[in-house]
Image 1: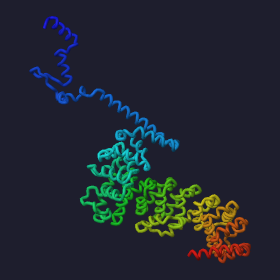
Image 2 (image 1 turned 45 degrees about the vertical axis):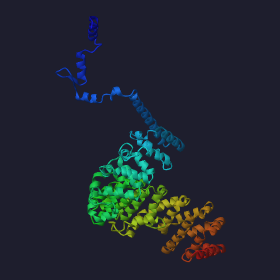
Image 3 (image 1 turned 30 degrees about the vertical axis):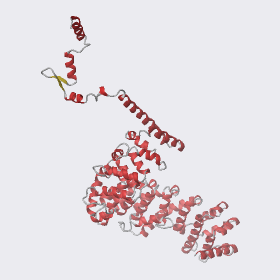
Image 4 (image 1 turned 180 degrees about the vertical axis):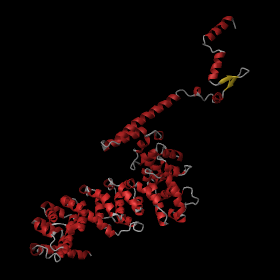
Length: 583
């Protein structure tokens, strides 16, 4: 090497354009490389790891890999933003139905190629769940195809996609439900931890509600029995309970104490477990107050849900008088909203049948119930409760299935007062409010067939107390020309027949009492009479049968003129002949 070359190297070193030994040592220390005593470099463990992966690190990556990863993230982020914006519009009540369908289609086109990745992102589970529909099986299967194996389904259940998993179960077939249940069963810790999580609990509950008997039994037994030693694979759950009732209830008690609260009690599977425990403990004579206390604190949410109300009914049947009083106080101000559902109606019926303290019932519950009576009558479930109060368990006003449900509590109820005494006290309290509302609204109510059944209940229960003013108002409305078309309806004819029956009972109690017939018949014009004779032969037959009993109470015009008309007699005879043939 000549002098000029050496000089050039030294100059470059001083300029730091070429790394010197000092520079290399400093750089090596920063990167974790040190020099041994012999001058050879000592490699730091981290550097060893890097050296092993030499060729796989940053320098060995294919050109553009990082850029593609960033671009994909940006692309998914833009999809999430647009999909969430579509979902927000979709949930807006002001948006028309056709526009909502277009929004769903647009969202599906956005997410269909990235469903597994998107489902794990916050807030996207419910967005993708909104795309599912029972009618669109192809779309449902496409969404499900992104979660083929058990691990993927379990990740969906426990992660941000839990709403999507629950919706897939709701719209899916038996096979889909079974796949999700198997995925949940594959969880090494069992089903109880899943039930304790706010994410996986609704998914497990959806599988229980929508699954077949086998699925229901499998989930229920795993949750109820937990780690109990004996197997239930070949035994119905009822037989398991009969094998070791006390052990099963104690096992359930431990599980429920760790999980039960105002949020988890809304799940049907938890309700059914509670019912099994309560029924078992009651049948074995064990104390049920511990379970009843928990359910009584959450009785309003239980009744407001669409699911069956078995737990609420068992709660009220087995509750102590003090607990019932506490529940009634909690219901104050919420009764009208409670009666917007059939479950609330059934619970109120059970509460009324089980309560001995009618003073508290009237003061806390029925007082609130009767105040908005004019509007409340228009609600079907509230109206059915009124009909139940006027005619308990009557098949005329109640469905036979509902009556059978209430009968289940007859043998377990803790109340002591007789049914007759209880309902007489309640009806005496209601009489003034109902009669006032009836007098003010009877003309309007008679225009609606749905309300005619309630009118019949009022007439049958309080008809003996009808005064002349109310009877005249009913007669005026029902004899009007524009009401002729309504007389043809069966519901209106039934009201007329109930009014005749009420006339008889009223006249038997008091010979000077006013009669509906004396007000109704004279007000009829020729047209109305013709309609009545043609369409209401049964009503006319009832009048003729009641006439001897009402002989002294009927006016001369009705007895001598109208009842003896040839057309009336012919219509009645024809009706009787037809009835005899049908029998």
